[in-house]
Amino acid sequence: MTDTPDPSRPITVIDLPEAVAVFDRVEDLQAAFYDLRTRGFSRHDISLLARHDVLEEKLGRAYWRADDLADDPNAPRAAFVSEDAIGALEGSIAGGFFYVGSMIALAAIVGPASTLAASIAAVAIGGVPASVLGVLLARRAAKPHQAYYATQIDHGGLLLWVRLRDKTHEDMAVTILRAHSGRDVHVHGWSL
Image 1: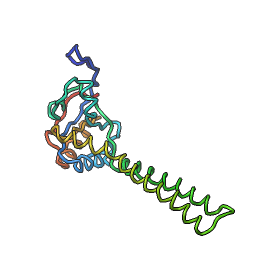
Image 2: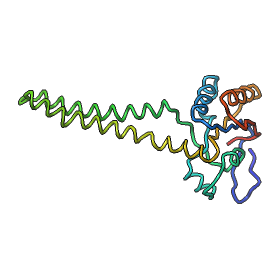
Image 3: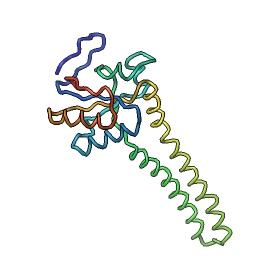
């Protein structure tokens, strides 16, 4: 392990190379991530630049460019969160509220004093509003994720780092990153 030379911001890096790329489109970044994963790279070896507020807190600067942080060991990292994971979260939220609303309506329908009018009212009062609320909350769940990508692109692109085990993985990662429109693809001799 090697310490970086800047004593005002000490950080320890690992003597293991890392490939770096900047992406201008979310779709290209995601395609590169999935391609890396299918080729045997661990999700733990793939990271992105952290959120804007984390960058400001750690680096103390309100404005930054992706190209300036690509080789900065002090740049905070974040795990990649796929669109599939966000979709699963949205589905869970919407489905959970739909389930709760359905159970409320079902309880009213199977009750001993249930009539057709009471059943319709139960669905209208319990099922439909809960479903609508679930859909609205699910849409809100994806907004921070979308804002993260937009902010990164506004600051020069989406940074992706890939820790490399050996020369074979280095060549494979560089090829994949370039194939998915990564720019400024290069390797530095350390990783976090």
